[in-house]
Image (cartoon, rainbow, N blue to C red):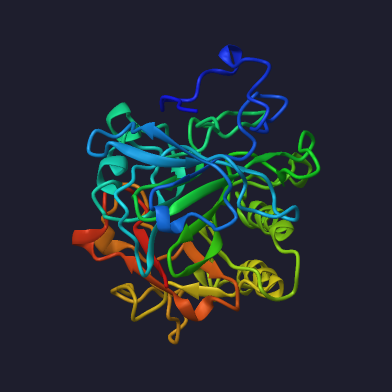
Length: 365
């Protein structure tokens, strides 16, 4: 059976029934598990059927689309869109984690980085010329909220023809089915399986910790982010079903500090440390970036401990990358694969990029 590739249609235009061989999500009519592989060698041996479509990308004629799940019954369901195929297969997977500051300009920078996968935060809907060259899930490019709605979200994006990407279907806690990935707040978390030749399949997760205000009863003027970060950790924990053997790389902007508090506050240092401790307890230790894999702040900030290995990843509005002092972006990896994950902050002023956050380069071998 042949089908033309194209953009997913609006829900209202999706037929109520589908081919009997393809499972669909009842509420949306979308495929429950569609795997797109750009490299035939990356296709798992358990795949039963493959379909060849006309590519959405002008530089490639065909690609393989696999419509049977590569995961077992214990795995959450997944979905994906098309990535072009040239049969180029990597020995390492290059991942970029980046808070894009809900701006269009970083999209153009991203597609020129020769990366395989991007873990994005505050990502707005990509422009049409970029959308034709990438692969994304079917999610809305918004983060919902009662008081406000943000036209951006966390996302996992396929960028190359060297890997297979399979998005994990997620839903809000109150609406999630038994095998869907339940998240506290849609738009703050995105996850997918990544498969590449010679590399055991692993999960990637993009995380964004939203700033919040304390309850009005406190009378406080604070804004806090560790509350959101703890929700991310709780949501992420359902992807771990055994003490050892899981393979997860999670990265993003947590809006918290590592190893210290603002202006040397011991109180905030202790609060922030609980997030890293919970990730460690799950079997997802912090793996970077840390010096020498990134430029350290200069001059040295008074709030930063003398022995800190932090590298700045954020600069405030109206300031330049050269003045950046705080690290807000982090990478965590399953303990069993941490030795095969390397992380570098692209935080030199001339490589920072068009956002207030620098990019993190993650290599998985």
